[in-house]
Amino acid sequence: MSATTMPVSTAKDAEPSRPRPWPPTIWALLVITLVARGFGFAYPFLSYHLKDLGYTTAAVGHALAVFGIGWLVGQLLTGWAADRLGRRRTLVAAMLTAAVCLPVMSQAHAFAAVCTGALIAGIVYDAPRPVVSAAIADLIADDGQRAAVNGWRHGAVNIGAAITGAVGGLLAGQLGFPVLFWFNAATCAACALLAHRYLDDDTPAASARPSEPAARTPLRSAVRDARLWLLWMASVAALTCAAGMFTVLPLLMEDDGLAADAYGWTQVANAGAVVVLTPLLNPWLRRRCDGSQPVTGLLAVGSLLLGAGMGSAGLADTTAGYSLAVAAAVPGEIVFFIAANDIVTKISPVHARGLYAGIWGSTLAVAVIIAPVLAAVSLTSGGGVLAALTTLAAGAMGAALCLPLAGLTQRRTASRVTAVPVPAAT
Image (cartoon, rainbow, N blue to C red; front, side, top):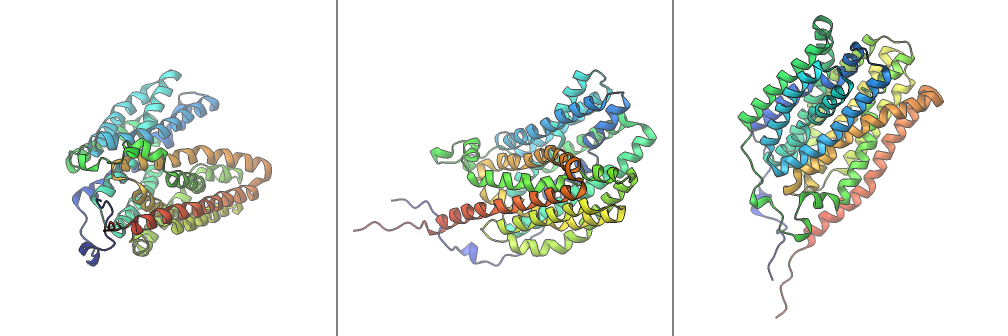
């Protein structure tokens, strides 16, 4: 009988884990993440652009909904393409599509053309997320080092979001909203060049294809993996809290009579907390993630901290109070995103890393849809206190879903470790 399981210990396992310099491709991926998010004006300023064109609030809402649908579809599509076509081809194609689409959308006036542009822009808006996740998993085998990379990657996303608001507002005030889409397109083209230069010309390797008949395709692997769907539901619940930072917070602050610049200060507080806390939390998170077991406990902690932090915003009524609430949510955000990326990487088969990352990446698009609806209902029914309680409940729900997720992941890990071939009886 042939042994198909790995031995419990190997010479490689016995070697001490030493940090290694990150390859240039990792730095390129982090720069792409920062640039794509920092100059990703399409989503946050689309409503202002359409209002400037004279569209009604209802029409703007429909266009933003179409964008959200595209965002959701785009995560699944780019994740699937990353496995089928390769990381570099997918990322270059998505960024070039954005570079062509965004200027056209900025010139569109007919509502059908606007919605078509919004759909395509939504598809490519967050395209780097699943591709970068899969590429990092390919390049960094050490669990702790991968957690450190993902920590700085999350920091790049948050710093980029702060840049988007500050630079986008300045450019829009001086040059108008259509110029934002041209800048967005130019930076997407630059990201495509970076991806083409630094990512390998990869194709799905024959060695990465599964041999088991039950998992011949990435889609079948994903559909049948209960761990992925528990992670998906827990992430939607937790990210509903995180999405409140840019969907619910303006509603709460407007309800308290605070001006738009007050919201800008909360984003400064968010970026500042990320810059300060990322290097402090990264070493600890790296040690916690350095092992074969997915860190479901950290995921639960992150979800609870997000719920408590963003929930406290429902009790604030000043700029300082809202800024403090946003900063309080940052530790949970950092812990949650690093833990979630660790779990996605550890549960995904090599041949389905892109699809798993894409399915998980769709949780943010879903959360962006749920958060403002939940907040509107809460504010209408019970004011800020009810909004605080529902946000806290969402975080608690995400943490509760981590319990069955932990049971499944521990069972799978234990079955792999104990499945040692037994010699045949003579």
